[in-house]
Image (cartoon, rainbow over the protein chains, first blue to last red):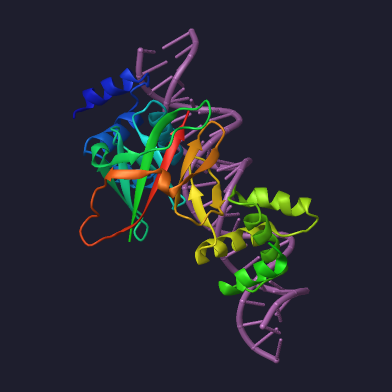
Length: 132
Length: 132
DNA sequence: ATAGCTGCAAATGCTTTGCAAGGCC
DNA sequence: GGCCTTGCAAAGCATTTGCAGCTAT
């Protein structure tokens, strides 16, 4: 994807296409599905020769998550992972290495699912398969 | 359960039955399945007229989790929940109120589950059903 | 022009740790 | 007695926030 695509993508989500947002977009959306932390992105940004405040990285990732460009995931780890896969999917999680691997949504099917309590509805079902 | 039972339970897990551990055990295991935070327990301990350092509560909960008396759960929230339900089970999670509700293990069945990558094995499958 | 963004540094909030004093076996 | 625990305070760490200056439209 080129820069213009990211500008359009950002605009489509009511986010001004600032330098920082475009850089993060390309890191996040250029190479398929990723699971990254803010700190990881800080390194990648630095490796590109750009500079960006860590606070901005956090703020941007949270904005992206709010508008649905990312999904945030919390696991055993104390850090938040941001998942650039916007499709419905699940995860393998290796607690030894803290590695996350995507599972396509249709790779898991249920035979039996409980009904939601009282007046509530099911928003989505997240499955984490823990590996050893 | 009476105090002696907790003393035995702790001993069975190679933990010395200190006053603090016995108090926390009774709060955790006397009233069925619970989802608590360290802070919540601090209040309950205080309400009982006992006093206990928050650090000790954290350390004890982590020890309990290590020996398998508790399971720790991280969700959207920034706090760690400790789950006194040791049976295999899943959760409903209401992100509005941050409420967690147990789902018995046999209330969810799979029709299709992916195989673990390369040399790895499945340790367990955690399902979180998000409510709205 | 102006509403929105960014960077910095400071603050926050949960959790862990170091270490001296106390408790269990 | 000796090792394990506790309590306190301080530190740690990921993340958020306040605010002055900058940028996109």
